[in-house]
Structure formats: structure tokens, C-alpha cells
Length: 466
Image (cartoon, rainbow, N blue to C red; front, side, top):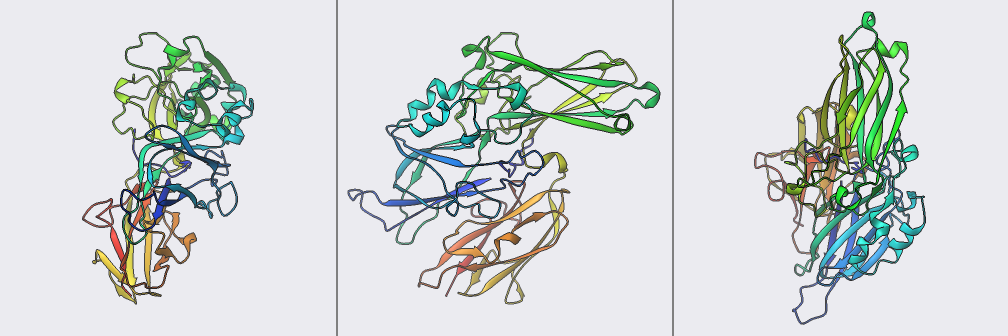
């Protein structure tokens, strides 16, 4: 599976959260307050399938040493529970310095089969309660869930996050937070290699051995061992027009199904399969499989070395290209992709750009790794992404406390268009040097803007000097 780390967005799309704390204290002193905020990536921008839809985000913080829940509340974004593309940074919450296991849950209000799930979330007092049946036997209903991309439950678990003071100046801790949709996306795209003289017609797609239950937050158990007979099947009639069959790409259908974890040591012959039926060809069966786990990076405590490759993972896009042929047999190819906002419309060309400039006071400073800014002075950045076509790029600063973009609406855009935005210090000079790192990512993957590489320590650094 390619690893481009979509921004859903839900890539959902990308998330970041940071903490700001006060002065350094002796170990014998009481814990300091920590101020947390969550920065959301591309959410609520998909107006077609609403796959990046987020209605609300709940955050839970558990003490790492004893599992006690010390924070359980809905985040707010400028006073509202729902984040938007423009208002994607949450209002602050407070915690005491220490080590925590963080759990994020999104779209709890979208689960409408009963009220037990939402009530159980409200009453979490200890991390062990997440193993209760109410969280591990959520109901999957093919007649509604399989074709509904909007409001899918999401979760992300980050254990052992240390929040501590770093010195006299407030510190910033950056960590990416990616919400996982509880379902996998199955896209079947049909292609015509036959021609009108050998006309064939697709009439039905059937799914077999789909789990009846799913878990939120993500669990790690072998599904067959716990629910050997809790499976369902469903089918959908396919009706493409005569004109659509004349095209090289006839059309596509999309389904959403629960995760199906299979362990290597489970020898039960039960797999999630798709059958395609129609006129002029034999029934064609496709076995869904993850293929390999070399680039696995989901935020959960899952040991992929235990998994069979016939596993179907949540928050993953399984794309099947099905070709009509001149014979009575169809041909199909399964691809395992990151599930990203509008990913099916984005080419997989490596990112490339020719226009990238940084200017301060009209002077080109792109050759400088550390760029000095005086209070009130701005650095103007000009950027145009050439490839991949349709890709979304985003500019980011690591220290939102002391630096900001003058117009945040210009710091994300599409390939093929030139954009200009500015960076400046957000506070008056206080006698101390403040720093921020600057980077640009495409579909969640950081670009190599400097020869040094990517990541912390290799990016452009802006320094407030006076």
C-alpha cells in the first residue's frame, strides 16, 4: 500500500495537537497546567460522498500509570462542536503535566442504532471500560451502512504521550493525530476491453462474509475467534447504460464495510469475497486482502506480524479494477491504497514543483536555512505545485504560539495554481528568540524543500530577532 498519508482528510483526513506550559519546576512541586488544542486537517470538504464528514470530536485522556480517565469531553472549535475547513483548530482544554493515553472519537452522534454507545462514552471512568461489549459489538447494517460514506465512526489512540514543561518560555509539542474510519472503502471500477461486437452486461455485485459487528475504538482481536458465526452477505443490482458500456471506463460502485482482522494462526476457511455476475461471462470472484503491511502506520496498538494478508483493515481504500474481455472470464486487479479525500481523482505521480520562493523585504532568502524576522516583518512565500494533478498541498508552522500566516486561507491549494502567502511573528518582541519550522505537505506527505531532507531539524526555520 502506498503511504501518502491523506489529509481527509478525515483523512479524514491530518490532525495535530500541541501543549503549552509554564515555568520549569522542581519534581517536588505540584504538576503544572498544560493547555491542549487540536488542529484538524481536511474535514467537511467532500461534497460528493462526505467521506471526510466530522460532526464532532470527543477527546479522552487516561493517566498512563493507572488508566483513570481524567478528561472526557467534546472539543469545541470557536465555540462550536463541529470543525470546518476554515475553523480547524479547537479551543483549549487543560490537563496537568504528566503522561497520558489519548483517545479521540469522532461522529458519535451518527451512530443511530441505539443510545447505549453514546451513553457509554459519557460514562467512561477507566480505560478498561473500552473493552466493554457496547464498544466491541457495534451493529453493521448493509442496507444502510454499505452505501453511506457520511458520518462513519472514527477513532485514534495515542498511548504514552508525555506533557511536561520545557523551561521559562512556553513550549510547543507537535504530534500528528490521524482519525481512523471504522470501515474500509471498497471501490469497484469497471472497464470495457470488449467492444460493442462482444457486448457483455454487469448485473449484480455480491459481498460475502462481511462482519456483522465492528469496534470503536479499534480493537486488535482476531474476529473469527470471537465471532465465528457473526457474518452477513448482501448484494446490489448494477445498471449501467448502453452509452456507458461504450466508454473505456464504464463506471464504478463504492461500498463501505467493517474491518475484518484475521490472524495467521486461524485456519478457518472464511474470507471476505466479492462476486460479480452478469450476461455474457462467468461469475467472477475477488478475495479482498491487504496484501502486505510494510507501510502500516495506523494509530492503534496492533501487531501486524500476527495478521494474515487476507485481513481487511479499517480506514483503507481497496480498489478493484474489473475488465470485460472477449472471453467468458473477467479480469480483475486489486490495489490497496490510502483512503484519502478525493484520492480516486488524484494521480499517483510523485510530487514536483518548479516555483518556490521565500522573500523578506524583497530579498530572496531561499538559500538560508534560518531566516530572521523582525516584529512586523513578513516573509513572502510563493509556491505552485505541478504534480500530481488534482493533489492538495498544505503549508504548516510548528509554533503557532509565536508565528502565524497572515491569511490562512491561502496556505492550502490545488496543483496547477500559483499561491502567495506570508509568515510573520504573531507577538511583539519580548527579548527572547522565538523559532518555528516551516514545511509543505502534499496529501499528508511532507515535501523535501531543502536538500537536508524532511522532518524536524531539516526544515526552514524562522527566527524572531527583535
